[in-house]
Amino acid sequence: MAENLSIFDISGRAMSAQLVRLNTTASNLANAGTVSGSEGTAFRSMKPVFRTVMGEAGKATVQVDRIDSSKSTPVKRYEPDHPLADKDGNVWEAAVDSAAEMVEMLETSRQYQNNVQVLATAKGLISETLRLGQ
Image (cartoon, helix red, strand yellow):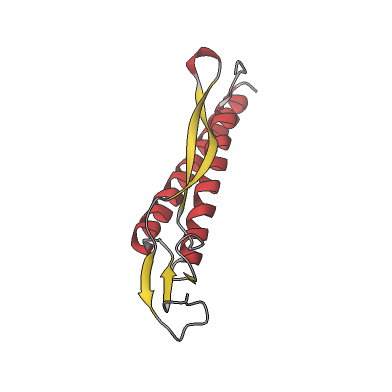
């Protein structure tokens, strides 16, 4: 990719990537504790995978490449009275670590806030430069 990336492009794309990360984390938290009738259909946490996008003069930003599902194994519980229980009376709880997802959400939020601050600083510097030129 040979496009000229401004600070606004770089930070804006990073914010978009963090938004995808935040949405997948929110989905993971929303599905934590859900149960399924089989191991194969149980929810597994998702994580976005990012890749570097290079611009001119060594400038780089980020792009979401794909979203992967966790390889974690759902927790099997014996609940024969549960409506989703299989013939053996088992249900599978979603493979989501709620504490780890909360840490992920806090980190993502901070990364997003950092990029907002970068944009605000760049805007302020440009405005000050234009004011000095008057």
